[in-house]
Structures are given as C-alpha cells and as structure tokens.
Length: 381
Image 1 (spheres, helix red, strand yellow):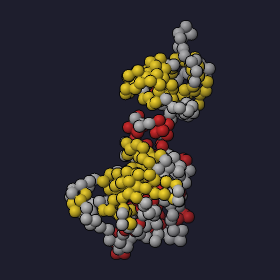
Image 2 (cartoon, rainbow, N blue to C red):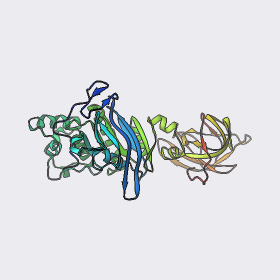
Image 3 (tube, rainbow, N blue to C red):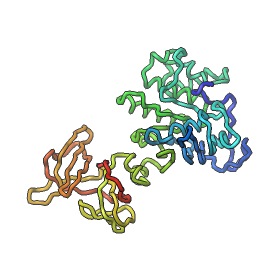
C-alpha cells in the first residue's frame, strides 16, 4: 500500500446525501456540511498518551489548520484520520461515513483522503504525469483527470518532466495534484512547506491556498507555524499536550485567545502585571480598559502593535526610554524600558522619528485582555 495514494477505486458518494440520510454505516448523519468529524480520539505509544480525547470537525470546502508546538500530537491526529495509525479510542467519520471506531478500521485507500507529506514523497523514477496518475484506478479516465489537475496547479507543460528537474515549489504542486486527482473528500497536509526556503515558502503557500480554493477542496493542514495557520486557514484548532484547547477563526484566535498558552503561542505576546477591578486594570502604564470582567492579580496581554509611543517636549512627563530599534522596511520594532520597571516591544510603521535613546510616553490602543497571574516568571515580554 502506498501512503500517498489514499483514495478508493470506487468512492462511495455520500457527500450529496440529504440531511438526516441513512448512510452505508447504518447511522443517521444530520451534519452534512461536516467533511471530517473526529470524536474522542485517543492514541498511546507505550506508556505515553500522545492524543487525548480530541474532538474536531472540518467543514466541507474549508481549510482547517491544526496548530501546535512540536510533540503536541498534531501529526499523529492527522495520521489517525488517514488510517496510517490505529485508534485506541474514539471515532473518525469522513464524508458522513464511519471509517474508524469500535470494531471498524478501514484501510487508508478506502477513506477518500488525499495526503501531502512533508517531503512530498514523489516517485523519483516516474514523470510528473505518472506521479499524478498513480492513484487513479479508472484507466480510461486517467489522462483526462491528470490533465485537469495539472492545469489546476499550473504544471500542464511539465507533464513529462522528472521530479529532479523541478524546483521545490513545483514538486509541492505535483504532490498536491496527486492528492487532488482521485477527488478525495479531504486533503490532509502534513507540514507541507517546512522544507522550502523562506523566500519561496510564502509564494508556495499562496499558490496552494488558491489551488485548494479553486478545487473547492476540504483540507486539514498540520503546522507549527502560527503565521502559516493565520494566513491560510478558515479555522484553526490549537493543540497542546495531546488536546485541542481552542478552535476559532484566525481573527478570534489572535484577538481572543482562550488562555495564556494560546496568547503566547499565537502571535507576539508580552505580559504586564496588573490589578483588575471589574472592567478596569491598574498597571504601571496607568488604568487600562478591560475587554471583559476580571478581579485581582492578573497579567495583561499586550501585542506589540497595540503599543503607542509618543515623543514629548522636554517639559512634558514621559514614562519610558527607547533602548533598541530594529528597522524591517515595512515596519520597525522598538524596545522601551519603563521607568517603573520592565520592558515592552512596540511595532510601528516604517515612517517615524523615534530613535534609540529617545524619551517617550507609552500608551495602549483599545481594551486589553487579562489572564490570572502566572505563578512563575514569564519571559514573553
């Protein structure tokens, strides 16, 4: 069995069944907009619990990112969906059909999934066309479908090339074309951009996102790269220590993290101690409005882009000094040392006259989030 060709010869078309339809597994499925549903997934390797009670839904035609640090269980979760690992507990449904659960464990090739691996896993001895056609069982349709997907990924003129004659980005598109060729119910992508050079990664990410959108494909992307998840995904599930701790759209995840872990992992976070009183928190910067109710000792989340710096005349009071400035072209990052103690980073536009050594007044844009005070010192600021 070849792992990168995971679609059945005769896929069962259950995606078009009406809500509440009685499908081949003998169960009623009222959620026809859900392409993949995972309930209570658990997986152990020896004594180590790698996946712990994961519940996850992927909506049809959308891209879901499974985001988390290395070792959190995200790739194992993807492999459980694909059938490349066996569940210890829980269920997996794909296109409304139970493919894994108690007494059921369908092989990968019958699950209607396409897989894009981190290293692309192209056959080096096969041309682009033959790599793409590998998972197509209906030989009379192979050429037509192969041309369709190569057109889709912009490689129609490369059909007879060998993998070693392609750039990394082109190899990535061939791997995606092969995954899409059998019309899978879902495309699973395991860290697909991690082997690309940084300057190529952004371009290929955009290309892959557009290809998936043009194909109307459902996709689940595993990544540890927060920027990748935020820019590509319709929804993001953050995984930590084998569990899903928050699922939200990118904007909500960034602006409304459910806890301190998510706040620190998704985006650039720094925390300022404060004392909350209802909808206000007192800090060394003065009182700040809170986005929600809180009481007692808290740590206030401050993103660098919410920090405002203003030069002031010598006679006006200031509360910080600029100790470092980094210019990146599209923005500049400044570090300020607060007179009351502690440092903050501010991200400003590339135009501005603030320089290292300047005295500034620090303020915060908008209401802030606060989390219960950490019991150990935080190094995010």
